[in-house]
Length: 400
Image (cartoon, rainbow, N blue to C red; front, side, top):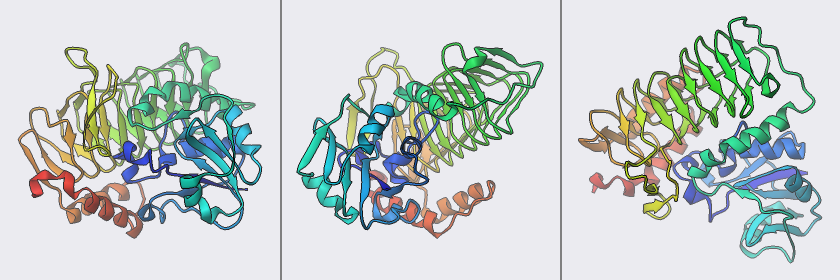
């Protein structure tokens, strides 16, 4: 059965800037992306994405003819929900209140009509589902999802041993180490939650890792780093300093000292040395952050909320981000003082003001950065950036 994960049009805009460059289901929360969670639980080798046209070349739908299970890409599955979805018969749809969760349809090309009009035979989920429909829910759910994914990925498997005599381990039964992991003179404390060390990842001298913690494939925790729990370091990242309850989606670096808390960092980002994020207002008031969907600051109802940074954005040394800062795609931030709490995509500057980071220059940087990881900045990637650049023109007020 072909599985298609769709971007709910009522949800995707509220997950910008991260969904400028990926489908909703390609977001990572826990160890796995939402798509990978479904793939594992449904036992399928691949899934397709129903997303924005400009993203389909990178995230293809695959075969959209014939029967398919279509699933809301913003929904995090558990075993019960996966069983309910698998039990759907042709023509049946599964809802959580008014939210379409999944459907079994005989003609996948009619999915747009289904999302709008629904199927005649509907049923409700057995329990309320987890929906990621705002950016801050990624870090809020991260600890729970690390625990779920840890169980899913390690069930019936044996961990590699900790072979370093100078590494201190607490709660060894909650630690799973994949092939190729290298650990040197670190502290791993999994008493309060699991620690997952992905294939070929490295934990360097003096690093302290507290669970729940997910270190994905090829990533490094640098010497002396303090990982305070509920953290995901996505594939091929390098992280140092102090990090708490944050997600780096992949291929991004925070290599030096500085604090990152209650934050989500996109792919291909770099935080300069001693970059710090505030995650708590001095008056302890709920944090408001910029909403691309509503074009205004919205109340998160959270006391703790740090930095939301879109793909390919960078900041210079000693950058200070105020509580609840949102940075778009392809921004370059530098200079003294606190920059504004909404930095539009393709911004160049800092507290003293911004100008437009022109697309050809952005492309030059992206090509260099991706080449360092042996990946091409090809026409598919360039077309995505071009579309985002055009669609965010209105955000760059100085251009007017």
